[in-house]
Length: 351
Ligand code: ADP
Ligand code: TRP
Image 1 (cartoon, rainbow, N blue to C red):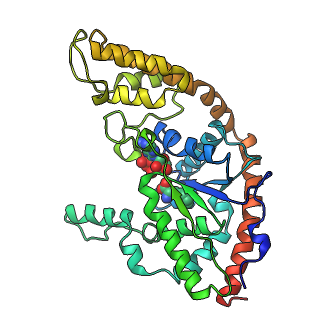
Image 2 (image 1 turned 45 degrees about the horizontal axis):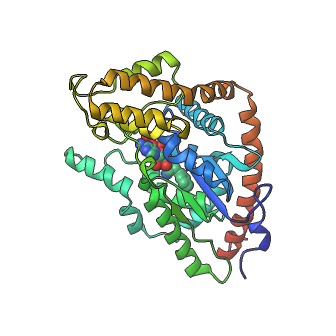
């Protein structure tokens, strides 16, 4: 027997029947890298797929210990999605913690997942390597949440019968694990229920890695981010702080070697393409200083972010339309997850 046919039912009005799903872990203030590398590509996919986008709040529990901060980041990531244009009528938009079916299925899937697979997961291996380098016990400070993280993520994906998962390069292994874990289940119980096998979609081109203030990948872990919703004066100060070399104003400069120009090139919308081209030309010819490039970057950024900032601030207010959107999303997500969980329970012989 295969999956009950209603389990592939519509998730949103105007359903295409193919699902794009992704989650963002609320473990810090959303930054420009998240917007360009994750949120915007996912919103573009929402035009051709049934989309299910959520906040992976239980995933953040592996590292965020302060309950107030946790609530703040969760709301902040949710508000960012909507400020960036997510339409909750079109996208099923929800909190992971509002779909408790996920956690029941996580146990079922843990029982078909090899421990060796988890030992090889990048995030866990990186945490061990850091310990060994520091002369600590390899597993020092590593909680079981971090170790089991890929199983929970696999279930987020599988429980919604996902076709594609838009993620950054660093998350591709996790999506491959989801496919592996689904394969193990299907191998054992495929006569009773088969999970759909998902695949990752990675945004191509420069948006894959937006550099941060110091030229390394923009990341919370490097403390080099441009948070999305800073007040204007703070945004200006931050842009001013981007390190540049001391080449004199008159000298020709290499735009591609400078974080300030790389960021400008990636954030500028099509409407600012000539500003970028002109900046490049003037830098290469000599006669333009880095200070002026920073002014250009600030203007472009502020024009992009100001309308979003206003919407974000309104959504962050308690009782805003965000709450209503998440409640409706949770209902739709739970209905879908419930059907898959019931089918998986029956397949393994529970109930
Ligand atoms: P961080 O590195 O700041 O902890 P996350 O790992 O929480 O960011 O990333 C959430 C999403 O944003 C992922 O899909 C990731 O690929 C994307 N992302 C994060 N930083 C960047 C960046 N510098 N350039 C492009 N995409 C990014
Ligand atoms: N692990 C992802 C990250 O750190 C967040 C995440 C959790 C996710 N569950 C997911 C992403 C399911 C895609 C699909 O960014």
